[in-house]
Image 1 (cartoon, rainbow over the protein chains, first blue to last red):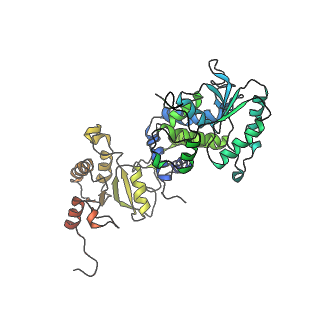
Image 2 (image 1 turned 90 degrees about the vertical axis):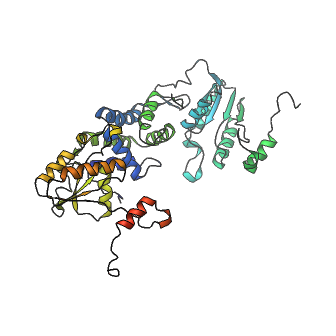
Image 3 (image 1 turned 180 degrees about the horizontal axis):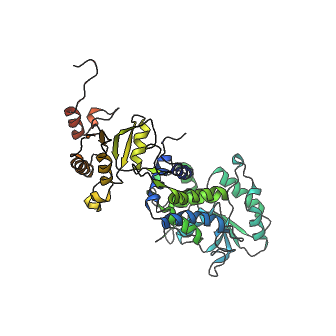
Length: 207
Length: 207
């Protein structure tokens, strides 16, 4: 069901491969392929091989399940990180988002998804047992649950909270509230409500 | 100057390669790479190899310079095409656009660009000499210039027109006018002006 008539089967193949990418239609895929075709052979080879090599050689850190080039990722093997503080996230992108803030100095635990019965994802599909094992060593002082504020995120939070209850570990979640720079009138009611209930002390002035 | 801190060098390489694509920033590139990483090894290999193989094996038709899997492209080797009618286009994408209309049954000549002194593209960088050679055989009855209506397109049209003047060949250009489905008030003045000057006879009713 091609919208475009291709002069070449090879071109059509490449365009079909590119149009499977998220958010990429056939026309954009064609633009990308023709762009690459204008580059020299080395550039195209290095493009193609970068993704093949990534798939072949990438590892998942055996501590936190983050993507890594080595058995244990650079965060888990860093000596200047607080290894007693574990931030639980849904996926690798969340690790990168939190790292980009430059505000977090603990380690991570990547679940690989969240509990979502609709998509057939249960607790056993996620790295929750492994989190429990990490906590059971007694070396972890606090677990921060940094999952989405959706029904699935809340379910997963609650499930993990119950699993970790027997252990002497503090469990916290991200603060929810009005985003920095947002105007109050545009904040949704639930968020605004939570931000009033969980208000923080104004340093110094309010006692 | 990475906006994202990558947990893996391999991942960073792949994202850097993808973000060189036109219209793709680092975040979109990351989304694409993580999407591919979730696919199985065969899918990723076939993705990577499709572009490497395209670059390695693609040919340019020796008649019209269209992309082709063979020495002579499927259009130039088709017996049901009018080989005396040549449509001159800037690039391969234009061939595909015209083919998609299903209204053209001649052959093509792909220039590989248009004359653009600003970008350092002169007549010698384009397949204009080859067009002249095709016309000089005397087998071509009409050349349709289907280039963009820009300054560069007009310059190229004029250059080709002058080059082909010595030969007994008809030279035409695409009709310019108000697009089908467009409202008059939104058409620009130049287009509307041209469409009045070059008005076509209303079949049957106006004589």
